[in-house]
Length: 360
Ligand code: IPM
Ligand code: MG
Image (cartoon, rainbow, N blue to C red; front, side, top):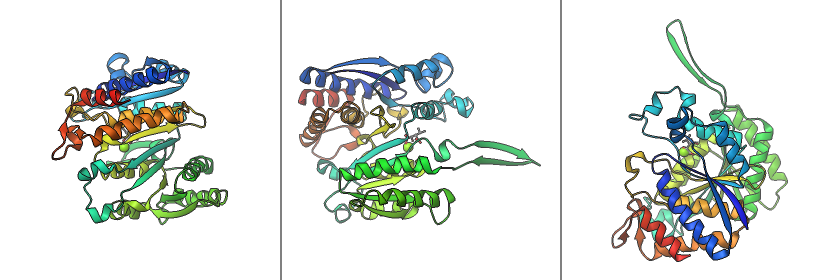
């Protein structure tokens, strides 16, 4: 099969992790006789450096004309990078939010799975880890606080900053449907996370999710408050299957979930619209402190490429092949710095990519 992939290397460690993911995809093409045509797009800081803005019309057009988008990471170190001297709407992150909105990528899937091989890197005690965990966070990605009206005003010498958190029932329904559909293919257990004891948007969230649950009698639904969820993730992570939540809560909880897998360098993500189209990126950021040093863990990006094979190209076998190769390389004891433990073999970004590609 032939597919067009828009590739966004981005900033920081982005280009080096994307390079390794492409290596793995090229190996898949060779083995399964597919053709992937890559087209590079500048986004974030890389786009600011060339065009003065983090996202151009041209970039949006290129992304829309592809079958899927594979992305590295966006952003720099705000304390030193000149990108952060620009007004907020011109900074790297605005480009990422812009492309999510333009492509209508409302469903962000972030799986958090504990590899038995990485148990040593998990900061939780053995009795808390138990049999391990395997959850997926379904985060709403184009609404809520991220996209509500915001402004900063000054009146009578008092500065006030306002961000608006709004959701309508349609936005809630479509993400809830995604979560229930995913749950059907897993352990049929949805935990919907909100702050319904305080927020109106959460109360609407709860009632719409209850309605959707009525259409999925085979799936169990539980509501959980976000503060409790943050606690439960480190108290008993094994209880979660599908976590359904809004944009901001999902941002925070997914970092927490990734940390208990041992390293944020292991977590992929998929951002989908109503069709098969998606943008695939690691859940982690651009780690400017280690950029260009061959230290970054490329696994989250390679796993994101595997999600692309599965969700956008219906290539389940190929996706499993990539995931199996990663598992094998971890079982063989190879580790990047972030997941290193005693007795393992330290490798850099490039070597990790080579090992995984060779294993396919
Ligand atoms: C993420 C990131 C982004 C977000 C930032 C870079 C805007 O943290 O993808 O989780 O908050 O969505
Ligand atoms: Mg985040």
